[in-house]
Amino acid sequence: MNKILLIIQREFLNRVQKKSFLIATILLPLIFPAIMAVLVFVAVEQKKNATKEVVYYVDESGFFVPDTTQFFFRKFEGDVNTAKIAFQYDDSYGLLYIPAFKLSDPKGIALYTKVNPGPNEVGELERILENRIKELKMQRLNIDQKLLDSLRTNVSILNVNLSEGGQEKNSDSRVLFGVGMTCGILMYMFIFIYGAQIMQGIIEEKTSKVVEVIVSSVKPFQLMMGKIIGLASVGLLQFLIWIVLITTLTSIVLGFFCLEMPQQQMMNEMGQQNPAMQNEGAMEFLKMMGQIPFGYVIFNFLFYFLGGYLLYGALFAAVGSAVDSPAEAQQFMFPITIPMLIAYFGLFTFILEDPHGSISIWLSIIPFTAPIAMMGRIAFGVPDWQLALSMISLIAGFILTTWVAGRIYRVGILMHGTKINYKVMAKWFMMKG
Image (cartoon, rainbow, N blue to C red):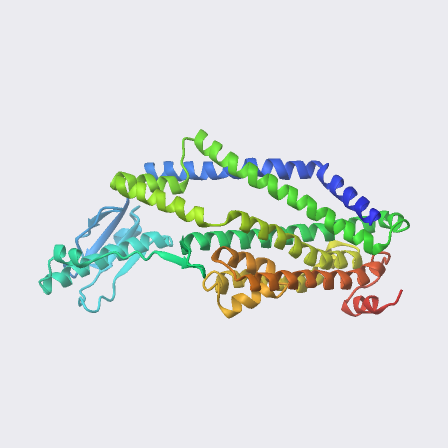
């Protein structure tokens, strides 16, 4: 055990004292808020200085009424063929052709542009035409717009969780969706990044013959465990530093640029329209955020990060011990990452859409997909028995992969120049000793 602790200490200090660690840990939190601030600043300035695009239109229906909110509309006097020829020599944004059509079946409308338009521009033109057709239909049915507006009612459903003890707790699925998505993506990134670092470190030591000196004093399994746990501690330290620095520096940098967070901008716009709505919305948002058990979420994040990292780290270590270069490792990387990819795509396909569905439950229990899947579900509330079963299966999965990886590692770490395939690795696994 003392030898494993020494290896953990060596790996931790070796990584932490590197300039690359200091640069990645300190510089990344500085770069991220700065990039965010610059992008928001540029977007705001671009929006302020943006000029409306000119759109010529040929209206054969006689129904079109231009809405100049986003475009300058200019009517072309002539047929569409003449307009197409003139448009080729003009610097306007586009040519909108509106043929004669039935209100019940508006077909044949076309937008001619010199470049592929963005979805926002096309969507805005569609909105203008849809609103105009709606107005014409209402006029034919003698329906007054004010009467129609008075019939429209917005309904907001308050989601209240009722526990077995009768306690009520408000929740917002949009907030929970954001928390689940963020935790799932971070879990995927950290496990993959730090797992790959284990493999890279083992390959470097193996090719430099350093490992042959080390294994003369410690067992290969102790060396593997020390490396995995040592890098896990580095990852946790780096993650905690990032959280603190990014949160603090984002507020400072945006304040320096005289910018506001998007949530605050939205709240201010709402407040300008309706001050009472701003106060009510702010209080409701703070109340919803207060209902999220962040301590519970962070604890589970740390547990599943460690469990998932140790599980996949053992597999990455086995691959690193078997090959002599990163290029050889590529063929063995894909099978390892398949469960992670299944969990990642399942996060958006099943888990965030239906966190309590059967597929979501199974993905959060199977040890190879549990770290990402469970973190996607955790904010929505997970029954205690499912969480316990998931944790137990993750621990069992880590023990299994460590045992399998250890049997491959003990042989592969001392092998050089051997052509590696799955058959050879299976042979190493079956060897006694």
